[in-house]
Image (tube, rainbow, N blue to C red; front, side, top):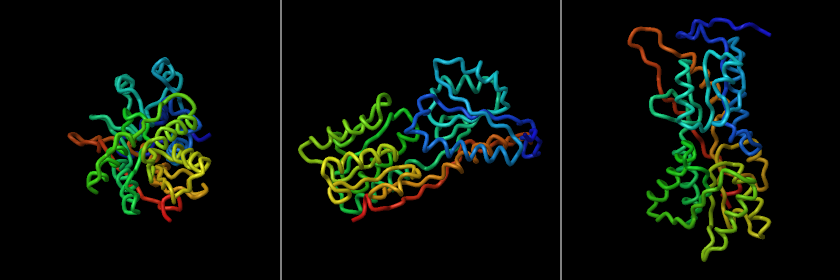
Length: 289
């Protein structure tokens, strides 16, 4: 194995080991199509620079600082949601810290434009003539999920459409993810007027919804159009192929490493606190007739 080497890149020469931290709630089969490519991008960036990357799953009930002492990292990458108290404890270690797919004031972070993505997905459904657009969302305490929800609401508002709380269902963060989607759709379809479109906060929920809706004898997109988010590998292979908001997950991980290495050394210099990556609508057969 190659030994860590110095790069001389903006004060990065004392970073030889980075810990990639993933909250235990994201260490699931449903979340892995998103976070594994992020980890892969970070690993590639580290390998190119001779930096050792350790993958550490943590939770609030675990001795996080003790786990870090085992790996002895020089810097930390936190991917996805973390309790602010945990992030503050990590910052207090004095190690360089960057948040991925999460934003907190005063912390360096790299995120996609989740609000624009939610807006583009909903605008696409509106432009396709859909008027009863439902949303399946996850916990709104998560920065990226809340931003996607805000984009959904903004698109409805700009189109002069009233948001209907009966068409917004927050999926629980515990239990079987597929069963949770099925129960949410039972609620939506049992209403007086069923939705004619569905925006899901991620592709895992959207793919489960697509299967469930077809099992109920409804046609996608004729009866209900569906758009997901993240454009995971399985989206384009679904039947019908799933429309989604594409985000570059590998680049997210790579830019997290680069943000850690971009530490100013000149007097008065400042690192860029927040970086935002572009998103792209991938319109496929699940939302276009």
